[in-house]
Image (cartoon, rainbow, N blue to C red; front, side):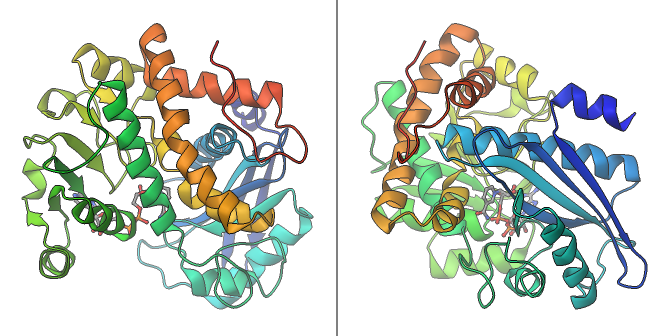
Length: 358
Ligand code: NAD
């Protein structure tokens, strides 16, 4: 059934890795390399079944293809998962190095990076065994991409305000952020600096208290965040929080956040949001800033080129929102846009501009 599932989503290659001595079981999925090598994070997770792990890596690697294409990067889409035996299994150097050796066998068709459960140290361990890795501090470049992701999310918010014929500034606007982690914290910092009022929730009371003391966010109960009165709802925690059960709670006219796969059923939930008059900015378009930073370093872009690409998230988002109005779904419009970039290609030597709207 693996071939059928690969064919359904259009995957090129899936590598299963098993190394008993190193305590590693992993799957590396390369979805599409039409535009270039597949850059995507390594996720360490305790899955209920091998089937769940395969589904996750197939879904995530496909999304990376669209994220890179919508950002006009000459990169493809890939992702890998490391299957943990227990939920909080300690990260181990031997497993990370074995993962590095597996990545090396792909000779650069897949470039590993950070994802859930993997930090800079883990990336550096992987980097002991392969040159095809980004986001470490010693053995590879990049470090924490979240400040760049946050900048892109804020640019997505500006596009949403423009689309609604609002002044694209934050003075006096209220933004509700779910999750004060790496990205949420940086989004709050930028918005507060631009005069916004920020309400925030986090399941970690310590993190929330830090955000209150150090940034000056207003604290809001986790159960009340989605339904709180605000101008923009910014999910920066886990995926799937917007679904058939929660869409009716949302009070914000705009949803724009970093969380990957924030819609449980992207095509259906995106249409349901539109039907309720809520403007949804597609996750993989607005949260591409971190990928742009890492891919850009890999591609040896200058800082000015990288900054421009993160700025371009605003114009790309606006085009997609326009197209979404025609299609009745902003998620469908974003996938359509990304596929168009893949079909048309990115001109050699160019850092890419927005493709022509149909
Ligand atoms: P993180 O782990 O640093 O932060 C997530 C925060 O959300 C944590 O503080 C956690 O306690 C909190 N949280 C979890 N469940 C919550 C809930 N129900 N309500 C409120 N808070 C909750 O992760 P991050 O790096 O900030 O990433 C956030 C999201 O953005 C993830 O979905 C990630 O996949 C996505 N993303 C991150 C980047 C990046 O550069 N880090 C890039 C693209 C997408």
